[in-house]
Structure formats: C-alpha cells, structure tokens
Picture: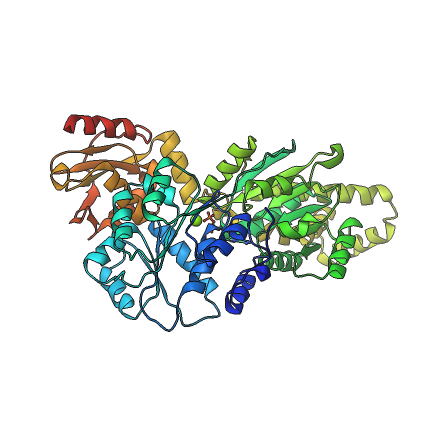
Length: 560
Ligand code: ADP
Ligand code: MG
C-alpha cells in the first residue's frame, strides 16, 4: 500500500489545512485506505497496530460528515478508557482548528455529570465517550441518539477485553439503523467479527499487515525520559559519545524545526530535513551533512527516506516511531558497510508498551540504560579537556604564554602559585558547562511514574488492596470492576491483581502507584449503576497480577 498525500484525499480545505498544521507529511497506510472508504459512506473495519494513526482515519471523515448547521448529536465515538477519550477528542480539536462550527465533547466517568450535561445542552455534534458514561447519559435522556448517523467503535478489541460488550450492544441497538458504523482495532477476534455481523452493513475490511523485516545487528538502547528532558538527554548522549554524524528522528515537521532550533541554541552544528523543504534546500542540507559542516541531522521519516549516507554512527529516536517498520528503517541508517553504530530511543511513560511491541515484532532486544549523570558528564568533559591540554603542551611554543602566567602571579601577590592560576583557567573553561546540568539532574533519571509502576508491581509485587462496599448481591462481576477502574484511570486492566467478590463487599488488588488515583476517581462514581465507595482495605493478603484469571474462574465456578 502506498502512502497517500493528504492533498490527494477528497477532504475540505479546512481539514487539509489542519492536518498540515499538525505536521503530518503523508497519510499512514491505514489512513490511505480507510479514509476514502469511510468518506464514501461504507461501513469499515480497520485493523492496524497501535500508533499507526487510526484516530485520524475515522476522525477526518467524521468531521466531513457533520452538518454544522444542525446542533443535534450526529456522531458518537466510543473509546475504552477516559484517557483514550480525552486523547481522541484532543486530536479532533486539532483537526477542527480552522472550523468553529462543530462542537466536540469527551464524556467519561470521574468528571462531574452535571458539568457534562450543561455542555451537552449547548448542542454538541460529536460525542467521544466511554461506554459506561454514555449509557448513563442515555438513561438520563441527556444524550439523544435520534440523529446519530456515524458511530465509531475505537480500540474495539480493548473495549471487549474490558467487558464492555453488553454496553456496546445496548448503545448500538439504540442508534438509528440508518447510520454508518466504523470499527477500529489493533487486533481481530471472532468476537469482533460477530459484533460486526450484528451491527454493521457489509463492512469493508481494511487490514494493514506487517511486513517481514530484517533488523540490522547494532547496539540498541532505550532511555526512559520525560518529554521536557529529551533535549538535555540528547545533548548529554552526544557529548558523551561524540558521534561524527548523527541523525535525530522526529515524527513531525514542526518537531524537526523545534529540535534544530534548540540544538543551535546550545551551540551544536545541526540542521533539519523535512518534506516542506524544496529540493535545492534539501540538497544543501545533505551537502553540509556529508562534508561534516553539520554533525547532527534532524529529520522526519519521509524526508530521510531519500537520503543516502553511509557513515552515520548514531541514530536517535527522539520520538518513538509510528510503527516497527519505521523503527527498522531508522536504525538501518547506522552501522552500514560493516561499521559499528548505535541506536538510541527515547521513550516516555506508556510508550514502553509500543516499544515492547517493536521488540516483539522485530525480535530484537532493546536494553534500557540510564542517561549519563552529572558526574559522568563532568568526567567526560574533563577527559576531553585534559587531552587537549596535553596536546597543546606537546606542541610547545608556550614561552609567550608562560610570561603571561608570571604576570598574573605577580599581580595577585605573594600567596599566588602557578597552580592557582592554572585552576582558575580550568574553571573558566569548564565551570560553566558543569553548572549547566544541575537543574535537571535530580529529575532526569527518575523513572517515569508509569514505567516505575509497572516494574514495581510486576517485579516486586507492590500491590495495594482496595475495599469496595458492594459485591455479589449487587450483581457486580470482576469485569465490571476492571472496566470501571481502568476506565476511570487509564490503567491497563491487566495490571489489576486478584479480585475477590463476596456477597456485600469486594477486595481488589491494584498497583500501588494507581491506588490513590482509583480511590479519588471512583469517589461518587458507579459500578454497574450502583454508587460505590472505594477505599484502601484495612488488611489482607495481596496477590500479583496474572493470578487474577485463575481466581475469577474459581469464583465464577463457585457461584454456578
Ligand atoms: P492508533 O490509534 O493507531 O494507536 P493514533 O491515532 O493515536 O494511533 O496516532 C498515533 C500518533 O501518530 C498520534 O500522535 C498522531 O497525532 C500521529 N499521527 C497520526 N497520523 C499521522 C500522520 N499521517 N503523520 C504523522 N503523525 C501522525
Ligand atoms: Mg487509537
């Protein structure tokens, strides 16, 4: 499948402008195939891996379908979690940058329902919500489905995994049959096909499958870096390893410009390459890169596709690539022609899942490393400086300068030794750069909360037991709890440990780092339509994730 240019798609000028502003250079494969079909009015099942741009695949056609003159609800997007609902609605807002007459609202549990009702009354045409909260509004008649003509089940596999099947079916059966139904998913399952048979009309299946890829045998490392420290991390790695030629990959054009500017600001020789540049400009940048007048080339995937340089000794994934194929192309830029190369990837928070996908699929191990610390950096800088000083001493012809040292000593008085003067000169050379790193130092290598949480819980078993004041008598099942907790906090359902359901109460083990958030988010919230109270349990033994399935089955067995 070719990548289409957005200009080749039959979309409005306003949407095209917005997409270009977002920095997208070309449509991803799923977008190239799905957008024309959906624009044509077909029901579509789209399957492609995470991070391949499924949101815009249904978002762009959705906005083209809305009648801005009508203030009735026209499109409903269902997402598995609060976090995804927010993400999708942010993407919609960006797509709507040049249109003021379409209103989009995310609705999810954990946010006061009154506020949502007020917003809905203003005449929202697109609602992006989690199934539980959408049902809630349907029951209250604050969401009316009568004019809905476009329904999207986003991340359908995840919604099913989280036990939303019943809710999804209830919602779908209340939307007029005269509608377009679109479903996106990273994986396909019999259950998804079953749903599609029941609720879709002759759906077109768009499947973007993975190509077989050969991964170059080079050193691959990743760093867990917060977004705001990426530049600092990049600079440290460049200073420590001193590559002659490095390519830094970013996901958008704007990002390329930003990074180039910041690198220049810090005194690096850098330039950028992206699709907005004319051929002559590109040639000029490449010329500079080849003859060594720039040491860092910042580029998008598309722009880098055409370049051919052999001796790149380091590749940085400043942004995690959109898919595995890009990853393999990117790192293939180094270690060519038998040279050694390194690939460094920055990974922020939950992106670790995407990175694990890349590892699984490319069958490579990307090992985690810590960024060079302040002390490492000082040692590196000092080493480089000492080598330079030695070289200058070996060159000789120092007499004129030795005279100046004597003058300084005389002027400074009797106590001043040659050592004092030398130390002052070294400080003048190195002092500033030593100080540079101080601010970020404490924060830089502290693992991101999310990744830390995963590690702690899976490896050290740091779980917290929560108590819910409802159980079997309220018809609460394990999947309702997984759905509610994961939906409210964005925590992956699989991190939940044991769930023990008794007649009037339930114990649930959750990762320590999520416990507080869950308790807070569940305050005033419902599970299975029943208001519940969630708090930290007084005591009890804790189980690790992975043991849940067994227990669930066990308790189900007992009941029947
Ligand atoms: P998925 O739903 O397939 O997991 P998303 O729709 O969340 O993927 O997209 C992942 C990221 O890729 C988002 O940051 C999005 O803005 C970006 N993106 C989407 N389409 C493109 C494109 N054509 N070019 C560059 N970036 C894109
Ligand atoms: Mg998605």
